[in-house]
Every structure is written in structure tokens, then in C-alpha cells.
Image (cartoon, rainbow, N blue to C red; front, side, top):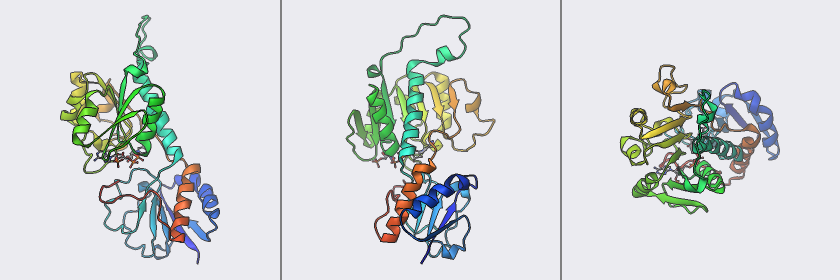
Length: 310
Ligand code: NAP
């Protein structure tokens, strides 16, 4: 019997994915139909992004799995109508994109590039940054993306620390875990990168108390998720000088509303959730492999842990 695969994402994505997906799934040897519309009762797999608008999975009575195109699954993981396995996107393209974005923004702040890029006013401003080994960069979240970014920063010579829920051992990265581990990690974090998922346990993890634990003048870089940061606490910390700058890619409300104080704040850089896009050419291979596994009765890759929410 032919396998029906529904592509449910923003309509813009369909032309970007269609041919790549078609080719990757064909390579598995499965007989399938890939489309953006089906009778829900006849769908076997959903290739999913939240911006497709699908939120009620009840009519999908034959569904075997939902395969997310996104790494972050906070908008779907608690959906009570979703009772089949949920796999998230883990992909080399995502890792590479995030590593480049994080390294770029860390280097901007480490080297003090803004001093010479903006507002030179004819002034010969001398600024000698420390070398990377004398700069501590801390990555909160040592998963697929945090580990890759941490390793890249370590390979440039930075003193890299990181924090995760469970204990980790990563060459070149001093790893912390647990509540006391967070405080130890924050204590030396001159540049703090947030690559945690958005879960009940991580909401507002950066708040007035944790911001106060950072060295004075620390830099925040958040490509993780908006709710990781208590926005009012961050604005207060920026105004007091506790935090020197925040580079933010993700927000509680996206697009960030035009009247949000972050836009006008001179110590905030806003980027529009572009840190790392899922790249169709590589991501479709993960989707196809999971469909192959589903049809072969093998365990899916990158299953979301519903209890932990990521
Ligand atoms: P991942 O592999 O699931 O890694 C998540 C990391 O966070 C893991 O190290 C995990 O610890 C840690 N963690 C989770 N809950 C924690 C807690 N309560 N306390 C301490 N550590 C905790 O996720 P990923 O693929 O690296 O992606 C991370 C996030 O990046 C995504 O969830 C998404 O929000 C964001 N993202 C953003 C963009 C963008 O363009 N801005 C693109 C892709 C992804 P354990 O290792 O112990 O489980």
C-alpha cells in the first residue's frame, strides 16, 4: 500500500522542499504520495512546521509519526491531540548554521568590532581585546547545537564552559550540570550563549537573580528561544551596566512588535530568528530516514521526550 505523506508547513516552504523531499523519500524504495492536502484519515506521516497552522491531530486516525522540520518543538510537544511519536529536526545544516551564527556574534563582542564599524567620528580609537584563551564563553544547553557551537569556540582557543540538564563530557569544554552547576557556569561567563529549549524548566532561566550572577559587563547572545529570558530583568540589567549588550534572535512574540523596547535600545541587537534555518537539502534526508524506519518497524531518530518537553 502506498504511504501518504502530508507536508504541513508555511506555503512558502513547499516549493523549497518538494523536489528535495520527493527525491530523498524515493531513495528509500518506499511507494509513497507526497502532497500538501489529503483526507486526514489517509495520512501516514506529517512533515511538520508550526507555521503550517495544523494543531488538531484528531482526524489523522492512521498517523504513524509527526516529523518536525524544526529543532524546537515547544509549540507542539504538549498538544493533547498528538498521540503518535514526534521526532524533531537534528541536522548537519542546522548545526553548521548555528555554529557560524554563534561564532560570528561571539567574535563581534570579543573583538569589540562595533567600535570600528560604527561611529568612528575621525577618532583613532585603540582597543586591544584579550586573546581567546583569556575570554570565557559559556553555552547554556549542550545539545546538538550547543555542543557544536561550544566545540567550535573551543577550537578557536576560547575558554568554553557549558551547562546541561544531565552531566556531559565534551573535549575542550568545562561542563556543568544541575542547579549549583548553573551558578558556577554563570560566575565566569563573560559571554553567555543560550541554546536551551523552551520548556517549563527553562522559562525565565535568565532572570534578575541569574543575571546578577554574571560578571559585570557580560554579553548575552540568545539564539535559543525568547521565553528563556525575563525581558524586564534583562532591560534593567542593560540599563544598570550589569549586562553590556544583548544580541537576541528569538522573542516571546515574533515578529518582535515595533514598539518593543528592544528595538530602540542602544545595547540590544535584534536579529529576526535567522540564527539557523533548517536547510532542505540536508534536512530531507533525516525525514526520509525516519519514514524508512517507520515502515521497517525500526525506532525513529531524534524522538522528543514528552516528559522533558524537548
Ligand atoms: P537539544 O539537542 O535538545 O539540546 C538541548 C540542550 O539543553 C541539552 O543539552 C539539554 O540537556 C539542555 N537542557 C534542556 N533542559 C534543560 C534544563 N532544564 N536544565 C539544563 N539544561 C537543559 O536541542 P538543540 O538541537 O541543541 O536545539 C536547542 C534549541 O535551539 C532548540 O530547542 C531551539 O529552541 C533553538 N533553535 C533556534 C534556532 C534559531 O534559528 N534561532 C534554530 C534551531 C534551534 P541534556 O543534554 O542533559 O538533555
